[in-house]
Amino acid sequence: MARVKQRGRVAGAVFVGFALVAAACGGGDDEGAASEDTIDRSIKEAISESTTTTEVAIDEPTSMEEWEALWATEREAIVARIEENGWGTSADGTTVTGPEGFTIDLSACPAGWSETEGLTETSIKIGQTIALSGTLADYGNYGKSIDALLAHYSAEGAFTDSTGKNRTVDYIQKDDGYDPARTIPLVDELLDSEKVFALWTLGTPSTMKVYDKLNERCVPNPLAMTGHPAWGDPVNHPWTTGAPVPSYTTETQLWGTFIEQNLDEFGDDTITVAALVMNNDFGKVYDAGFRAFLAQSDLLRDRVEFVTETIEPQAPTVKDPMTTLASKNPDVFIAMTAGTSCTQAVVEAAENGMKEEVGYLFQPLTCTGVSFVNKEKVGGDGMASDGWWIFNPGVKDIKDPAYADDPWMEFVRGLLEERGIDPTISSSLGAGFAYAWPLVQSLQVAGEMEGGLTRSNLMVALRSLDMTPPTHLWGLRARMDGNKDAYLIEGGAFATFDGAAQTWVDEGSLFNLEGKSLNCAWDQASSTCG
Image 1: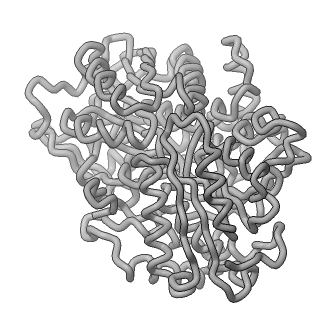
Image 2 (image 1 turned 120 degrees about the vertical axis):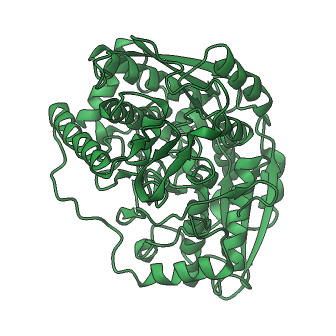
């Protein structure tokens, strides 16, 4: 194994040139699968880039009034673009068109399907399967924030469409405990009994089990609460879009490039990378993505020994697998997990010596929130988390005092407090607004389109979105572009946890991968983009 010469905040070079690093998952209209050449070429091109940040032509709003004015202007531009290009549903009701060749064949929808199922004259029924119990129940806080924001804009009359119908959102949550076996009947209930207009899902395994059905039923599955690359498949799964964060595959490429650009820290010996991997579709895509990077990296292919241990999603402890990984004396550790196991990995690393001996320890972007690694969770003075690394996808943390005066954060904290919810109980409350905000905007855009709010118009609105999110670091863009770009937000920064301050501290500049993650026609049999 190699020994890291000096551990600390020394990886400045890693932030230059990530612009094309995320191409491990191939596919667009003309590209089906990622090849060895795909990743290798993209990495080389990325390294040659001179900058990763995006110039922003406007000043960041300083009040909610300024934010709302900006969004109104941006929505108007989106609607104008849609109208100018004649996108939407054809006159005969058989075809939906959108940007960059995006199409949906409505004639393939099941008999009895309706554009407006789940809509009444006064309401929009949106269903949700979500973990309100179990080891991933912290993500259930997303629903509290979503409900609060939808209720606010409903009360403001934001969902009055071009046909004059003023609707409020009826948001229905069902607890699946992050168990796909429970998700399936709950989705059936929401579709067949509740007859929802659109259906939200949380978690890779759960979404993977139902997204074929939702697309076959022609039901919008917007902003699935998972970063799996499979949701970036507008050709084969036009009714599903993914999370407002980079994909997990992109994240694995960033980890790999981080190691490449810090090789001088490891000496000349074999570099041992250890990973704790969740034993489901979520963990498998992390594992496969990182292995693909290693296999196609000239710098790491013969240098890295990659060792893994798996855990079940509802495992009560990670002690045994973490002890096994510690015995491998790794140079780098990566938690390819979510929920409680993120916290447990920190605690175990502090107890088994990994915190002191391992050069770099990484949390996954699923656990970016301070509430997964703060002293209330890891115990003691909270220093067990000090020095851990993470790829921060740019979502503002509602618990971070740095955003105390941020107008958006003040606004959403107020919404929660009005409902008797303490905004400081979980970072996931802030992340929930990152899902709610783009849906609020898309519902309004869809409502302004010809025919008003319909299922097809909602999907065209989502696939045409190009707006400034208040939920993310300034400089990131919420943008999809039909069949060309299926990922809403692509960017972020590496960060390390400051145990004394109990917060993540960005290391280097924000980088922007906008439009660089290739679409992914996921093959479940091979666990690759096919």
